[in-house]
Image 1 (cartoon, rainbow, N blue to C red):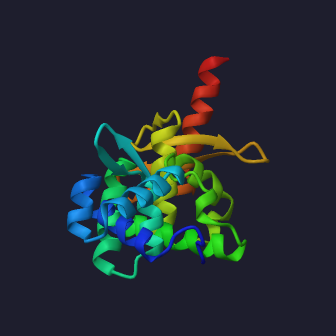
Image 2 (spheres, helix red, strand yellow; image 1 turned 60 degrees about the vertical axis):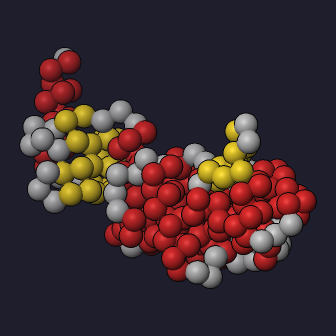
Length: 209
């Protein structure tokens, strides 16, 4: 994947922001050794691309900036830090490895369809979930877990009689299933069907008659 918008100095500044999260242009110049005027031009550019924001005298990296850093950096420590900070920014309650799996799957999808990651709204994780949901069957388990966790967070859910939490829907045949479920016994599921869901929906329908 090529991102023609950023040159090596841009990426270097982005890497520092992914690590430090909040920093002034003055301190960034001191740490990087890049001239203050050059640092300022880079920060303005990154802000225009939506990779960072400015609050008073501090610059902060956005979730979009963290994802782009993960994709562009050749330093594994920086990539891992970007993942950790993205996990916090997205308020993701799964593992960092699940996020890694998801972003790697997303990269393959973007490459395959020649889509620049700059055109994706990473600041809102649900928009990324919507992009990847139609190809969920092709994803690894960790990536599916990311989709399921965000669906559980974003949509109304019910507590089933066995204590599992699920976001319910119906397929084309009218059969109930869980778009996402957090099961007490066997964890997170995406597009899950079970007898407990069927019995729960039947009981709800009967009670409303």
